[in-house]
Amino acid sequence: MKRVLVATDGSDGGNRAVDAAAELAKTTNATLVIATVGGNVTGAELRRLASTDGDLSKTLETKADRVLRQAARRARRLGIKSPILRCGWGDPAETILDFVRREKADVVVVGRRGRSRLSQLLLGSVSQKVTNLAPCTVVVVP
Ligand SMILES: Nc1ncnc2c1ncn2[C@@H]1O[C@H](COP(=O)(O)OP(=O)(O)OP(=O)(O)O)[C@@H](O)[C@H]1O
Ligand SMILES: [Mg+2]
Image (cartoon, rainbow, N blue to C red):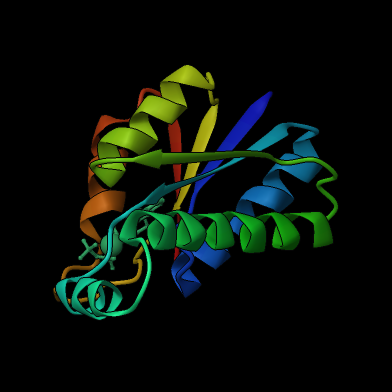
């Protein structure tokens, strides 16, 4: 195994995916790529963000940066010295799949659920789409 890519939205599920991916990368001596797709906030969050001062796009960038920094910290704690960090914009699943192809990942790791947890579905829509369309092995972390 050469490259493990993990997608996180900063949720508990995303954090568990990062931990599992870091352990997998560590034991298989693989490079770890951590990816997040920014800008996917709920309507309520967006209203709150838009009503606060400052540049909305800057705020969203800062949020995405924070997700990546926090994930990198978790990975380092598990022994991954220099994870590769990637931030994208757009449809989360499509963007994750783009990263998987571009980074030539051998495995993609996602959480079962993410930040919205609105529907009663067992799998979130992003993990579902990634699982269905990924060109490589997919690991879904509960
Ligand atoms: N914006 C994102 N950037 C990177 N990874 C993401 C993103 N959104 C989701 N993921 C990945 O997909 C996993 C499942 O999240 P998903 O969004 O599918 O579920 P959800 O938020 O519970 O439901 P919903 O379908 O309403 O978004 C997350 O744990 C994470 O690994
Ligand atoms: Mg989600």
